[in-house]
Image (cartoon, rainbow, N blue to C red):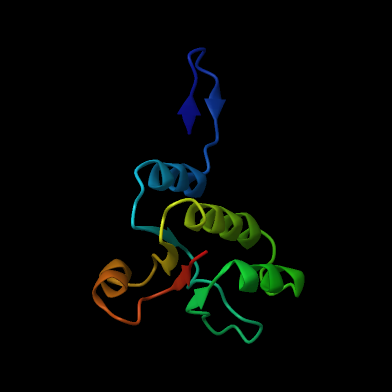
Length: 113
């Protein structure tokens, strides 16, 4: 939630806010914790890495739908504006951030331009 100078409340999207900050500070990577494993294919298997071309295809063939579309579009915007990669990880899993940062495999879906 946010407030303006007149105490008007606003619902601020956390992914959008984090993306704006990441772009402004030229972060190397943005990690978005969510309640999903990452981007899943049509067989509900984790897609470990996607780019702008594959994102468009996944939206067109309705693999990515609903509320995941704005999340993915925000990630792509961030990855296209100075941040080398954005990763969506499952915040419900123990140590998911450590696994993302300290392993070669990662723990979610990496989005690059």
